[in-house]
Image 1 (cartoon, one colour):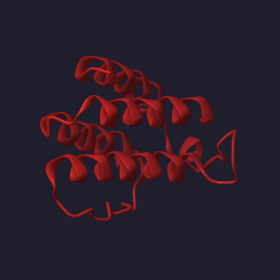
Image 2 (cartoon, one colour):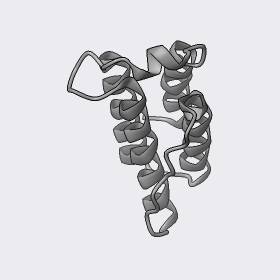
Image 3 (tube, one colour):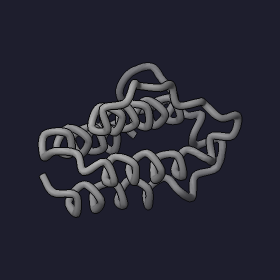
Length: 106
């Protein structure tokens, strides 16, 4: 998995969700019993964890902001962090798999 491939998968997800308003974020995801916002925030946290691991830094909790409309921006930021960390192919592949699974669950 390359950085460019992860970037492409991430862009597809962001394009899918960036225009959503609060009712769509609050709706239950197609898999599981969580809201779409909770599912995307879980993805944000997972990618942040991969970035921290790649940087050799401790993992930190990504804050859940009051406004779910910020989730696409949080996703962009943590993905940029992962790509800047020069993560290995395994971490990039795991991130891409998480993104794809999240897209399918939304």
